Structures are given as structure tokens and as C-alpha cells.
Length: 448
Image (cartoon, rainbow, N blue to C red):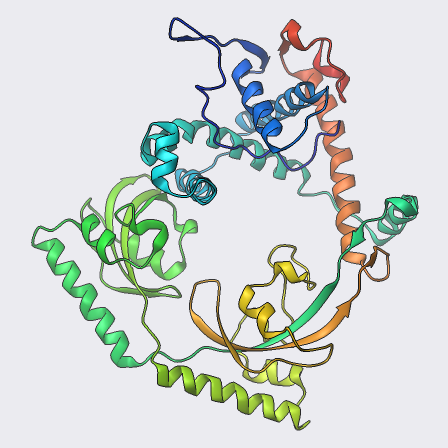
């Protein structure tokens, strides 16, 4: 069993169905104490049930789960001693992401609420402290290994030690470049959006509920159904333009002027202030691009494509000169895979619109101009060129240096963590119940 650097993901499993009950009383017990933190029988059983639901589990599964939890409690103990913190805004964002994931899995918010017998707010309340502890552990883990680096010599040495039949097998990959054009938004549309937001602001000032208007009109799907509420956030949790206006609000109920961000136009209401954190609501409206402006953007990219086809300009130079994507236009249009941080993609990692546009082109060729959406959901036109195609192969140091580097770094971090666990075990109060004293642990220092 290997305690991995990435902590075990916490799934929201209803605990009532997992714990034994007698006369309506839940029976639970402490299986371990690590510093001031405990591991309950229910904690282990929940994780075991989750893994069992995902597939087969080995004979030593509960011992493996238990040791992973011991490691998390060590991290939590150190985080508490080092005064590591996570903000309420970060916790709320984490909870929202998890809720969205489970809603997508179960089908709807209503079905999730029926499953738990609680509303979304109550579900979040139940798991808020658990998520906070997990986030502290993850942050402590990052602090432990942030200074670990690997040299080219270490990477080559690591690669040579990997048995040939153990090298990763890689699927077909592609390297892409892009030229991006954002259709301009007509000024009349912007004025219309601002006028609507002024109207909503006036309606609130005359007595209507901001939250009701947010449910009815806000175009932020993540917060609209919650009355526009964002939860407690700090300045760093918000885009700068939004934060600059939001943090000028003084009293609960205050409403901001209209603010423009990369997402659209907003008005913001202060719900509550706690030190450097604010609980906020907002209404977001996104300007719509007219069909004529979409047509113009398409034609604009077509004219750039013609320059490249006629060899009047290279694709890379055109990307640098004309592309409006700030993340790629300074790098010859080279696209970065957000899932891996490198410049190679597998087909499954591409948005459907991009994969469809590329379906009939080969290495060195480019697509026609096509419409897709950016990460903020804005309409955008693109031309994409396939810079390189890497056929399925066994990983090698020449073709896949970054992958080998990442594997080497992960291995070195794991060795660092193993040594830290050994030292931390010796200096931390740890008491383990007899239920787990017969386990074969990777790290022997748990039982004293």
C-alpha cells in the first residue's frame, strides 16, 4: 500500500445508512487519536463503502484506508501547529463544487435533497467542518513539498531505473496552435444591459428582494438559484474589478454601482461582513453579440486564414499579431492543456466543438474559422492548426520529457513525505484501537 501525495477525495455519502443503530441511537467509536484529532469507526466505514461501490476492494482495504486517514490527521495536526488557514470563501467554493458534482451525478438538486432528507443548505452545513479539515490537510501537504525540485540528472537517473515494461503507455496526442477573435459587443447592447441593471437596483431600493431578482434574472448559473449568493469570500477569491467595487460596500444591504468584468456586467449587494471576508450577492447580465458582429468576426478570421494559405504570413506570426487570446498569442498561438499544464492533448480532452472542427485535418493543416466558447462562456471564433501528432507509444525521455519529469518529481516528493511521516510519528501522540493493531502498515511507526 502506498500513501499517495494526493489525498483521498471525500465523497458525500449519507452516514445514516452506514452506522449500526440500536433503539434509534447511532453506535460509533473512536478508532484512533492523532494529536488532538480523532478517527471514528464511521469515517473508515464511509470510505470503505465508497470504494466498494466504485469496484472491488482488496482484503487489506480497510487497513489502507485507515493508514491514509492517519496520514491526513498528521497533516492536520501540523497545520494546526503552524497556524495554516483556509478562508470561509475557499470552503464555500469547495462545497459548491462538490454539490454541483453530486447534482450532476444524481440528476438534480431535488433528487440530492431527497436522498439526504435535507435541503442543499443543510447538506452543506453538515459537511462544512469536514471539508475545512480536509482543505487544511491538503494545504499542509502542499507546504511540505513545495520546495522539492528535481534536476535533469535526477530525471535521467529515474528514467533509467524504470523497467521497460513498466513505462507508461500513451494514447495518440496532438499539439495545437490557435488564432482567436472575439466578436465585438455593440455599444447599444451594453447600454441596454446597464439600463436593466439600473432598473433592478431601483426595484431593490424600493423594497423588492435582491435575491428574488437574482433568481429571476441573473445569468450566473452557479449563484442565481441561491438568490445570487456567493458565500463568504476574500479579495483574492474575486476578479479584481469585482473585488474593487464589492469591498467598498459598508453596511449589510448596500448595493454597488454597475461593474464590468470579463464575465459581463454586475450589481452587488453586501449581506454580511466578517473581518476581511464578505458574504455577497450579485446579479450578472451578459451582453449578447449580434448576428452581424458574429458574421464580421468569422470573415475577419477567414481573411487571416487566407494570408496563411497564400504563404503571405506564417500561422505562428499571424497568431502573435492578430490573436486576441492573451494566454497564447505571445507563444505563437501554442495551446496549453488546462488538465495537464503541458502542450499536448488527447482527443477526449478537447471541447466537442474543437474536436468536430478538426475532424478532417492532418498535421500541419488548419481548420476553417469556427464558433466555440471560452472558459467564461463567451462566444468566440477560432482557427486551429495541428502543429504535431504524436502516435500511441511507450513513454520515452526524448518524446515525453515533461511526463518523466513529473513522475520523477512525484517520486521525490513521496520519499520526502515518507521521511516526514517517520519523524512526525515519533513526536506526535498517537493511539490506535485494537481493531487495527493487526494491520500491515507501510509506515511502521503508527503503533507505539
